[in-house]
Length: 419
Image (cartoon, rainbow, N blue to C red; front, side, top):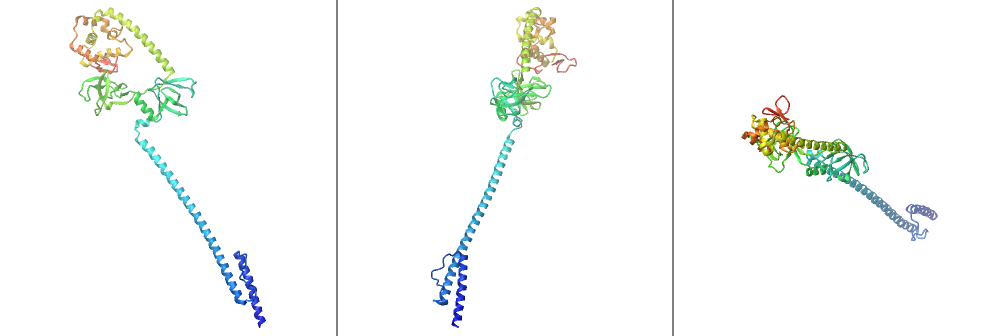
């Protein structure tokens, strides 16, 4: 019995030892506790006590290891999850900020576009030369290329293709390249135009009256036609429905319904056009020189007494001869034609030179003017008309020809048509 009991205890001890070894291997325990005696000296209680202590310690270490591993895993998972979340949030915030900034930028551009006037918008593809004399337009984008034309301070060009150093432009009949450093673009070009260009009222209809004041009953200073341009008077008082202008050195008003006010910009001039203009100028000067010589000869032959009369009397006399029976406006119109020729540069630059120019005024040619001057029978209305014309009144709007109404198109005043 005693042997059986011992055998049983031995078997139990063997089984416990194997179990303990397996547990130690699983838990990673290298050393067996020192207080464990694998003998039968203390009997079953000692073995069980040692086993319980060992199992408790092993379990504690195993649980601590599991908890540590689990905690580490949790921390890793938590940190990883937080980084991804933060990255996602930051990415979203950056995207929203980018969209917001883009929207604000677009809004700013839209607001800028909305605040532009119609004229400013039209100037966005325009350029002007910021120079005192002129800017050469060249065939290619380099300083040695052929010169095709000139861009003057008042000239406006349209951008064809903008480059870093040279820009291709088109103005008038000229298309070529100009250097960027001498250009102003878009809104800056518009501001430059307002500084260097005069403003004009461009007439949109025929027979428009220029009046002394801004009302329909005011005195008529001149009559202008479609295509004429009147210098805008920026110093005059603004009157609703009227545009202040200057005509023949007099200030007046025209109805705003029949004019378009804009800057008097110009086009570039090609080399061919410049050469042609120079030739025309030289021809005009030669013609004027010949006309003066002819006028001097005609004055000597037909009106020896004209040298002794003043310009007002001479002008009144030709008005008497040409329009003595006309309405007062018709008388002033004849005097205005004479003065328009004097100022034009195409005719002699004096009243006597214009009146006595060969083949022009028939009264000077047939002796009628000489008789009126010698007798002095000039009506007061003709003298007043001459004075008004000299003061700048011009019902013709700058015309330089007239004759009896005969079906020819033009401005009809009384029995004359002016053209």
